[in-house]
Image (cartoon, rainbow, N blue to C red):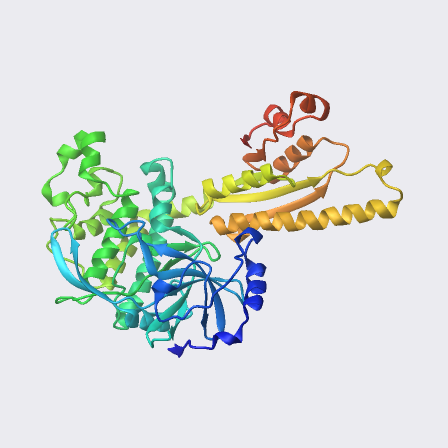
Length: 488
């Protein structure tokens, strides 16, 4: 653990403002900047700067709680920041000590928030791609302050719930690969246990799929609980909850079944219910008969009917691995061979309307697997009549190319930051010719085998459309065998 204390005089306000302008949009640059002492997180606010290990961090918003019952409450001791040297987004986590009783179902047990525990685990998992990475320094009061990577991506909870058109489609076409990923994540927890550490707060929203690597990573290790005979029992229960959730493509509750599928509800008995959460169904085979018995047996270890429980992660890993190999591997192989990314072509230009189209796709599809995007800009080739000489024309084209490359890269970063993997976002830039823009876009759509074209609607008068045409209208009428999204 390193001491983070430095003198504020290392950076002047003018220098800090210049650094902020490198990484922040002009409208987000404050007029003044204050360097704050790190001893009290309540005094560190939006647009402040803290100096940690001689590195200035520009503080943005407080992070928020995702826990059920506390959802969206601000965590004032956890702040997002920008490393002003590298531009990387970081999570700054101050020491916040609390001891409390946690209630899970009818069970109450003692918990503590331990920054020392999280610091130990950050050191332990250094270099592992299945855990968030970070380091621990001390604040000006001598308490641990963790500096962690901000992971761009969606949680396992969000991803699993939105895979597939329905449960059957999900189970046969997406679940085998998801279970395989979850097995690897359980091995990561086993690594902690083998080194004498608990995760302490295993939840589906504590798994984020990193868009830069395509891998899930565990986060939040500062909880500890007073355990009984089995030190890792609560961690195992958390793993079981996630397994039941991903197998059901969400929590299957008795309330939902009573309203939507009463026949299934009345087939249930007390033995089919979660051992702790008595409104959640664990015996999912009664709801989805195509779930293999080998897999359902694993789920039933977390039900009211269980007489034998998992003592460690190795037993759970063996049973999940057997179910995957015995009954699900073939489906996984078929899915891998047959599933292709759905390819979208987004045609953009220099207008704000095009930016709205990119933002729409980012918001609608970002973070979901199975999609690839190509950003396309066609620069209309200028006629020679508009230039004094050939050199002037060449200079104009060069300037337009450079501006367009920068714009395409900005749009590419928007998509990546929303959750698209870097290798699934491509850009193409070309000069127009005698063809209309819509014809050239359709040519690219055919060559790239894109299933969807996305364009922005430029609001033109009827006179403008009549004289100069409308690309979006032409695409709607001329495109074949693909969808056309026109974003207002």
